[in-house]
Image (cartoon, rainbow, N blue to C red; front, side, top):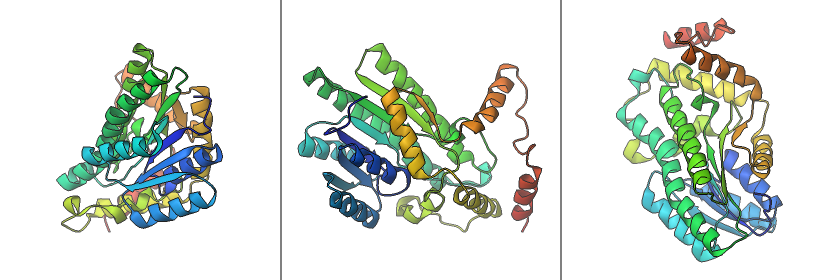
Length: 300
């Protein structure tokens, strides 16, 4: 996708974090914006700020776990703007702890947002974009699914999140191949950020009542939360940096997008272990103090 001005961008999780920065980048390029989020106050603030900069914005509260709400988002987009060109399936949440200690509600919440949210976005908006392309011979489109470096690695005490993001990587690769197969004028990318200062470590603030925690957190969940907060808050690459990198990748037709390419050494090591049937290596071998700190926190 080479041309952005006057085109339409749909962004889930668009009121904060990476989504908000995607909106900033899209607005700078003259795009019309559709922002979806579950947090109404943040959504209202984002719309107000972007409209003050001259952007044309449609903002809708949307729980991406619900297919009917994503469909309503698509319908409203077409009614307001008549087309969609760029889709960021970006909404995401996190939950940590030892994998056997995660509740059914934990799994339903994280997979509902991180996996089903992307599924709904892909199945609804891809078909819509193909219809737009059929009407416009000059149509250019692109879909970006936000995964994580956790979609390529498997750190301890992040099992639910790891599973969800591995699914997003697989879904995105499949989408890319399918679009290529039918020669669609639509590109696809998977974004795999590492630790970037956003609000995802506090995503429980918007956890819906139907998947709420019914018991207090376990020691491993408390420890995982503390470690994640520290890692996220200490990140040196900003959400704005990632958004800039992402738009550059869209323009270049690049599929894999990384915020921290230096972390790919760990990915290469994992792939080598798979190919040569070696057991997974110690993820803390280069920083054993982190493992020791995590173990100590789980014993408190």
